[in-house]
Length: 134
Image (cartoon, rainbow, N blue to C red):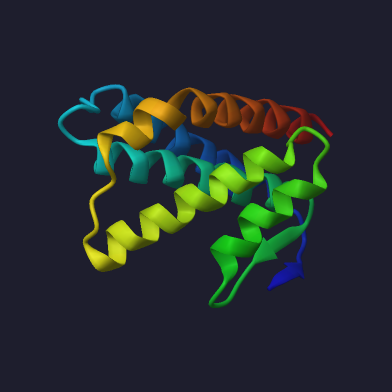
C-alpha cells in the first residue's frame, strides 16, 4: 500500500549515499561469474531510487506488496514508459525467486537486459536530482 507521509529530504540524502556505494560495488562484479548477485544489486539500486523519489513526493510503500507497488508507482512519472515498468517488475520477480527460492539468474538475462536496466537507473537518478531541487 502507498501511504502519504511528510517528505523526508534527510533520509533521501542518506539513501543516495547507499545507492552510490552499491553502484561502486556493482562495477566490481564480473557478470559472467556472478550474474545473480549483479542483478540483485541492480534491483536494490532501483528499489532504493524509487523509494527516495516517493519519499521526496511525500509517499511511502508499506506492507506485503510494497516492492511491487513501489515499482508500479513509477508509472505515474512521465519519464518512464510502460515497457520499462514491465522490465523492472520482471527484475523484481527474478530477484525474489533468487533471494527467497535460491533460483539463479541466467547470464543471458543480463546480456539482454543490462543496458536497459542501466538506462532506467540513469533516468531514476535524473528524476531524483530534479525532485531534490524542488
